[in-house]
Amino acid sequence: MTAITSNLQVVNHAITQAAYMAQRRKESIELLAVSKGFSAVAVREACQAGQRAFGESYIQEALDKIELLRDLPLQWHFIGPVQSNKTRAIATHFAWVHSIDRLKIAERLSAQRPASLPPLNVCIQVNVSGEDSKSGIAPGGLVELAQAVASLPQLELRGLMAIPAPAEGMEAQRIPFLKLHELMQQINTQGLALDTLSMGMSHDFSAAILEGATIVRIGTAIFGERNYGGNQ
Ligand SMILES: *Cc1c(COP(=O)(O)O)cnc(C)c1O
Image (cartoon, rainbow, N blue to C red; front, side, top):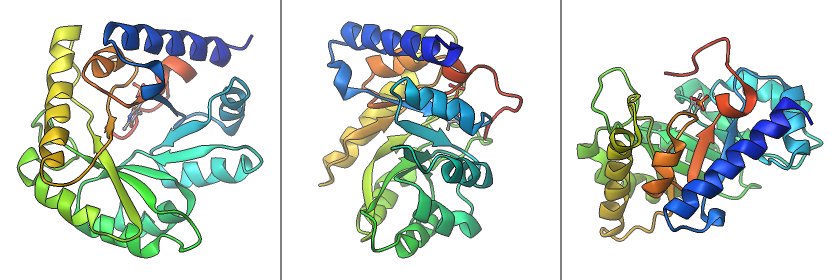
């Protein structure tokens, strides 16, 4: 068994454990394998082990892999910062975008989504830790942005995403995830029906599952350490 295959087993087992602790069905939590910084060969290996959904943060790197892996039944999620000159490529080649934090970007993605494809699933990225350096919209502007994004024809607003500041220990890790969950509930009282909480990475996904994560984005625990730090 390859390292990626056994890592996937360990991660899936840990997701099952956390779901049990949270008294949730395992099927309510989707594993997004974050393959940024790893090769198409590594993704192929993960696919052979049963993994289908993959997350990428850098558009050129992603497009190269998507092209090399066209023969596989994969679902691609864009999770990095979206620059406006990259929206057409993203709207064309991805099923999901997790990192919407401005209306202008959402409008471009909607306008550029090919009519032959189903609407692009999107999440709004929220800055739940209040650090200036992190991307994501501040909670204060969230309801307004959500209403506007939800009205765009070629987008399906599915939920919220966050990358909280790193914290040690389950109790501290749970706080920003609870906050994101509460923000989604608040939006849903305004007439929207969001069903997705994209939260939790290799070091904190169990805490995220306890607070209701429906997609956990896991890279290092599956593929190993990257040579670069990702989009943070
Ligand atoms: C890189 C990245 C991840 C995966 O992080 P790991 O710590 O390697 O699990 C998840 N989400 C986003 C947005 C990322 O950029």
